Image (cartoon, rainbow, N blue to C red; front, side, top):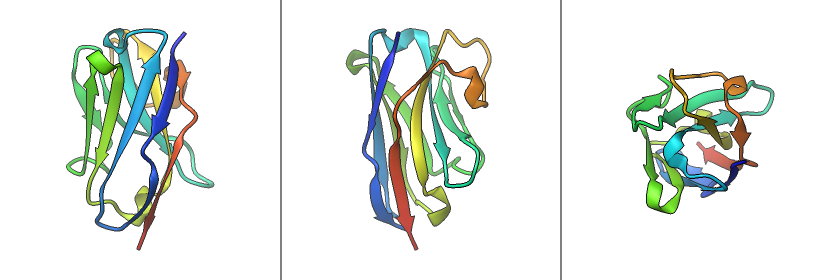
Length: 124
């Protein structure tokens, strides 16, 4: 079992930055692909970014060049640095984990563990 707790969300003006954190417990993240998804009201949950257990990083086209995912295995923590935020980035952001993922997966159903989410609101 893996427990995930997100933090770092909040209200920010367009063009601003936020850093989300996801602390994992129960298992070491070194064996998991760790991902971030987001869900805006009335919309489906969508892939934002992931870092594979091998260290490879992947991004949705909508955030490429603005968001950076990273991990600190010693702290069992994954981060999502979000820069140049736009109102359309407003959503609840969820941390997720998938054990020894062998191919990049972009759908929520492919991930086994989820955090409770943290709200990000970007004002125009």
